Length: 199
Image (tube, rainbow, N blue to C red; front, side):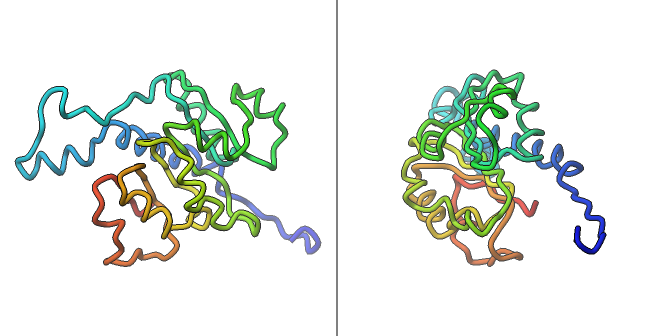
């Protein structure tokens, strides 16, 4: 495009704030178990008191991880400021000093995976990062951690993600899929610890 004098406009900046709000909403819902509690309530199986919050945790002060820090990450970090989170970022394209200027901790992918209560997958797709989060990486996440995928489906191995959330070890929120429309019989549709959205 540059060689031919064609102007290219990206919509990332325009959509960043809206997607960031969606990502934060999904993280809050996962951390507090809101969708599952709602489904149980509608079935007349709601649980009251402390037993309804056994698996819940606070986003406030939580260890948060970003995979990628582009337009979406920059919009989301501003929304997280009032929560006082400690945010680690893995982005091999950006200098650590530049990330630190945003108040974040530059980290390896392994550090981000092993320390995060909530992992936001925000990177753009490249030839190098296809299925960069597979079973080996998901196994590194703490028990009860949440994965929020709102950038590109190709970054995550969906078979591995399905297998991992099925065990109940982690929770996930997903609004991008390797095939859209998403197959009606896909097992992710049946799991209570997953939030699905059509972006």
